[in-house]
Length: 307
Image (tube, rainbow, N blue to C red; front, top):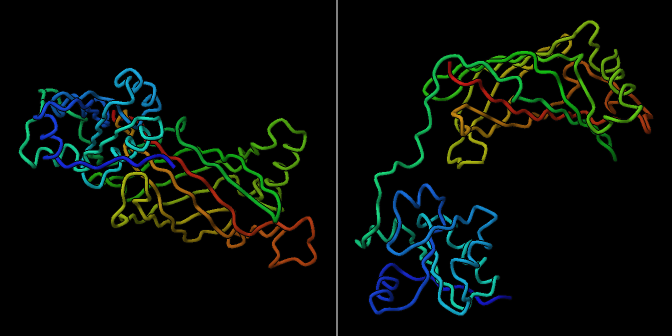
């Protein structure tokens, strides 16, 4: 195991600099944050980027000399991750200012600030936003005991209604005749399986060519952090001649272009929508024809830019 790095307090680091100690100070936050405010003598090298180790070789070429890293502050693992990388890279003395920039400022030590603004605040969405059909996507996954198939559904149209920046309603329509099987894309069996899915055995698209999802209620997930499910969604799914309630969680956020985006996995029992083929609840001695009752739909929704 590599030698562990050593945490230092703001006063420890300040004392080391006042005593003339030679330390390379690395700000591991994203570059825009570094430019807005950083510790004196610090150089920027964002630990989120894969070039972090490569840049360290030029910023601190002598691995026998001390290096100190810092990030946003207590609770963020940015500096700790950077310190662990440097220890693994062979730096002999790695220090971590665990209180970060926040702790340094709270302790009353000086910082270098610029008039440059940080990242813009996220837009507050209101009213109706149409879905970008080129960016949004519906992917299905179906399984049996040993195998699985995956493919896409044709999203025809969709919109979300927003209030206070959060979705509160919406509707989506998808073309059941546009179903594909991605894992059999270049296989002669692709059309065989797709025709099977369109047939009376499954979704009976001759009579029921369109599916719909209507969003009725959205609740925030308490304590959710970015990248974790932050919305609980309730709505109605219509397939064939049935409409049934479904609920699932979604991860939402704002793209770099200022659009609302969300991803989710909806898992549902297809037999509730009269899709019975291969179900062990309705047929006996299925053998190789057994198909799992639960189907997954992986959803990605991105709204169009504001007009």
